[in-house]
Image (cartoon, rainbow, N blue to C red):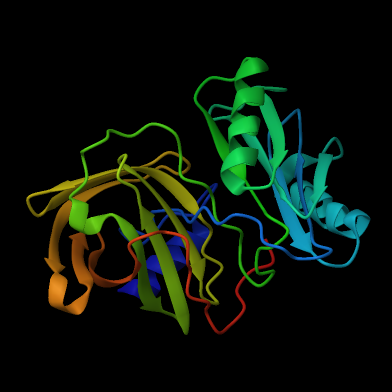
Length: 264
């Protein structure tokens, strides 16, 4: 069931879709104190396709890698690179691609870089802008960088028992899901399955939930059972049932996985 879900995510357009919840995106981890770390994004003004990279070699080489990923994703020859040392960089684009409707931002945290990118996208005329890429220099190079929690959501729309950071054991690694009290979520994979991160809005109460991804064509709804003694929640949705285990109430820690997945 979950293998099938991961396969769907790998094949899905834009930010991969799949497991009822792998249709989720995630974790807003701040950049750490890496002494010489670099992060870069590249975006095509004409197509709004983007790529990202991070590493500890040189700022130029990390930028070239982001440029390559942008070109491979359909950005063509007009991809522009934005990079940072010891920080985070983000690119936000209009959800319905229109040339030049994008913004980029940098900052010491993923959230700060994303906020600047979203503001730049709106200033450029973008409507319904969302963050496509948000790497930080401190991100583990083995995994696709998490996305920040998205703006919006409805405070009070989430069962307090579900707020926090969760993991699902899958494919010799873990999937990580952050649920915010403001009714948003973010998901990323730390397993060797090339599942890409994404995020959106989430509601849960009285054993029922709804989920909407803002970066992929996926909506889901179903039931959940919170198991306080086990520190777990059993979720049942479109693609079956999975048990998520709590990592932390405060989403500041992500348990590392053991095997590499994707460079992007």
